[in-house]
Length: 230
Image (cartoon, rainbow, N blue to C red):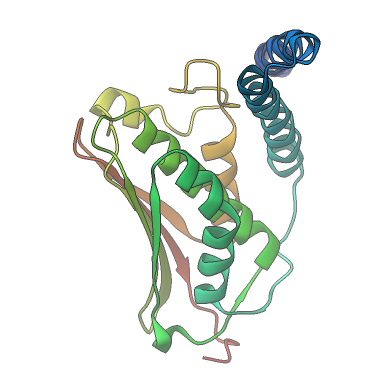
């Protein structure tokens, strides 16, 4: 019975996410069609922007589901945490700029290389930075996301910090619940559960600090391996 209930919850959650994405696509296509008929460039850009939101939602949902449902052992290779941070920021910089958000990185040259599953850690940081950008757009004064790598002899710490809307204790306690989202239909509700799963597969943990109106900080703690090349 529990398994059936879990399957039902998953299907309902997926249907809800897909419905939101399809609604965005329909709205975007409707506006785009009218804009083309009237040769209205401003409305055309608006319609295309809405359509891109729907496409991004479906893409995010598909990737998050793949990471969430698949049981896997991390495929560890020597990875530079600084490089992962900088590649994520470079990918999202233009999108953040369009929303009035500045992305900044802080390197730790002493981090060296660590044996990590590069693809999944990249995904975890990508999810956190995307969320941080959204948190800034929901806040009147939110305009900065800082992504940093830090190392100690025992662990690598990847931090994503924003000055966005922040969250209450109640919201923070539900963050890693499957299909729970604060984005009013714009999120998949799987982004943070995926982050938690990836980090725990590496034997690590995720720490969250946040206050309403004062932004949020997410800290990924990844224990160093003995085989690390330093």
